[in-house]
Length: 177
Image 1 (tube, rainbow, N blue to C red):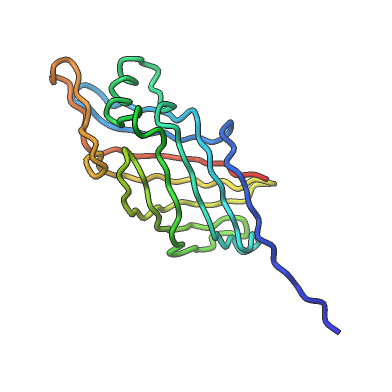
Image 2 (cartoon, one colour; image 1 turned 135 degrees about the vertical axis):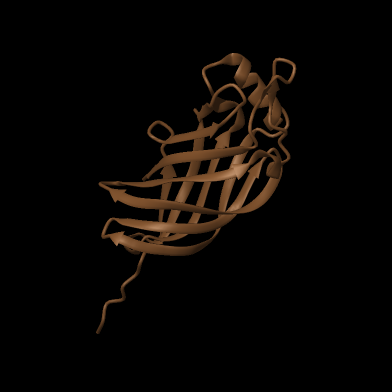
């Protein structure tokens, strides 16, 4: 008689305290960045030993994107239309590739839907995923244009300071039980 072997799905939760997400951009005056203070999300493996991702979601509260400068934060919130759209969300639709680098690290390319300013667009997100003790660390970056999501790049001082359209999102997201 054989004993059946079952692989259980494992669901992990984003740890806001240790996770990091930063948006970087340029302007006609200087480079700028904002950092997310409030993130949430989940990562589900169909088989954690093989890093088989079946679900990945994350969300950032739009008004938690802070620069440390209230005038810039106000412009950011206006551009993102945060009174109407409270969150920025990513939902995985498919893992395109997962290349094993070590027993504890894979490089992943995944497609998903990103919603910013109420506009949903498909993107391909590339990141590494690493198991470190009892947590999984997703790390990567993604470049995009603000105008793709209906965002008019903010201006200041009667239009004399203009932000560039391209931004880069850098993240180091920690998921744990």
